[in-house]
Length: 141
Image (tube, rainbow, N blue to C red):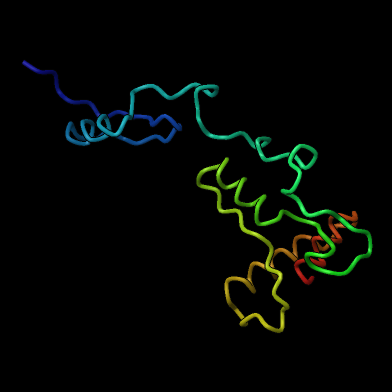
């Protein structure tokens, strides 16, 4: 005679916890690769915060900062499209996007791009380094 089913937690390889409340749910989770013990931190395939490409190591992934040389792309300050593509490839599930370089007058008011630009400009107000100033120029802040 089989033992009564007990409600319990099951864990994915990335550490996502799901509750198996029925035997059917348990079997479904098992087929998806869920196990009964949480993964150890070193076993987790999730990337660490420091795994982003380094500015020193990855030539071509960051725009060069050119002191007082124009605005936007010409000034540098931020990741290039190539750098963003590499970061997203190295960090699956990342939502990183390139800068909104469209002039504010050309953006539709309330659009996603306009909101991203507004939020970036608000949080970067206090940036005073050359790189920070270049990024703010690139975003038309």
